Image 1 (spheres, helix red, strand yellow):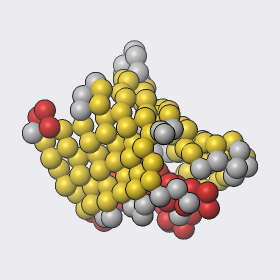
Image 2: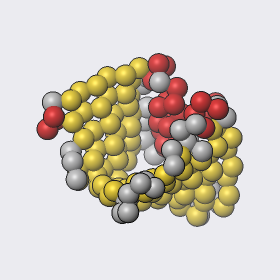
Image 3: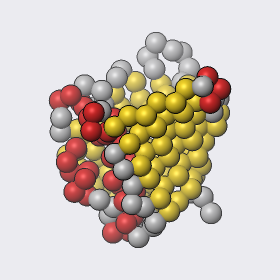
Length: 162
């Protein structure tokens, strides 16, 4: 967490695949993840559609310009979404206390080498949507996020930016 806390900003490319049992093939997407301490996280999907999910403080904004959609939510009103956001945001912020408010946290590996963080939701309400989140990385970089829940798996691979 100390290594993560020391990185005030990052911009990384991602590829993501959502495996849904009802579909034969996973749904792929690509884009950019932006992080700026202390609490700004943005997921900008550029393909196959252009959409943004931005979180800053306690506000979450979803935008899809091609359909004229813009939704603004308070994370205090969306406990499931807050837990999902904090899985990434609190990890990038190096905030173990915030992670522990939402998850049982297990760490394997070495902080300055390859590591794996397993997050299991403590809330039954959140567990109904997400059973487990596995984050893996090296040093101060998250390289993969696998989310299991809702009958499917989402696999995000992150390519560190410059």
